[in-house]
Every structure is written in structure tokens, then in C-alpha cells.
Length: 154
Image 1 (cartoon, helix red, strand yellow):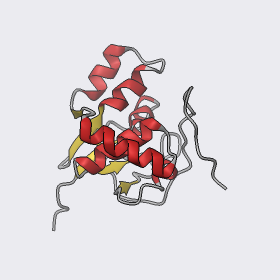
Image 2 (spheres, one colour):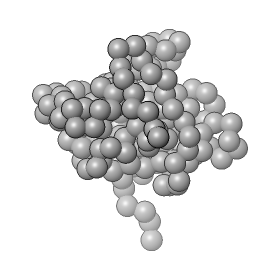
Image 3 (tube, one colour):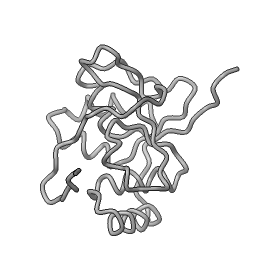
Image 4 (cartoon, helix red, strand yellow):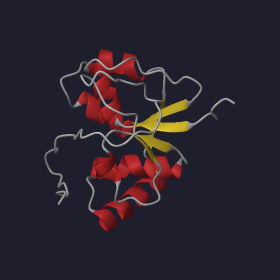
């Protein structure tokens, strides 16, 4: 029996892993989306805009509208997670998508969010695509951005 088609929101870390040598991001049978926040985060790095455009072109970009912004504000107030992560989590919830990320700890406080971890990232010898199977969390972390506070893990 075939796996059902999944509606996924791919977090920025998965795209960064791809740029660092992970296998190509392929939607397969899944419908893959990304947040406009991911575009912003990728462009804020050392990646050229043409490369970012080519990387994101095959997938559907989701904007931050009023309902996403309001939900993100509530998530941030209730959990203390960073604003970009709150916006990405709110996008996944509002569009009824499963978030694909290796940064599970960033999103653990958001109880209504469905999260899929694609497994080990580049350099681990076991890279997978964005639509990979759920596996135990990896230890990847995004660096803090200026003006944001991160909750420290105990």
C-alpha cells in the first residue's frame, strides 16, 4: 500500500542542509511548501538571490497574512519561541501542514503543531529528502539572530 500524500511545510534548516550537501530536495508524491520567512532567512545568509530563487522555485511559497501573524503573536506570547519560528509554526497550523525540520526543540512548545524530522543532516552519511520518514530528532540548531531571544534548554 502506498503512503498517503502529505502536505508539508519545509523549515529553513532543511534548505540550508541542502545547500551544505544534503541530497536534492524533491517533493515526491508530497505537496511541499515553504514560508516567506524561509526566503528571508536564506537571503540573510551568504547565499546569492539567484541560488535562493532556484532552490525555492519548485515549491509553493506561503505568505504571512493576518491570521498567520495573529496566531504567531499568540504562539510567541505563550511559548517564548523566536519570532521567525513562531511565524513558521503559525503558517503550518493555519494551512494544516506538517512542519519538516531537524530543529524539533525550537518548536516543541507549540503543542498543536505536527512536526516531522527527516533524520540526520549532511555529513552524517544518512541524508534524506525533505519528505523523508519521521526519525528521532537530530541535534541541529540555527544560530540566534540579532534582536531575538532563544529559550535555553535545561
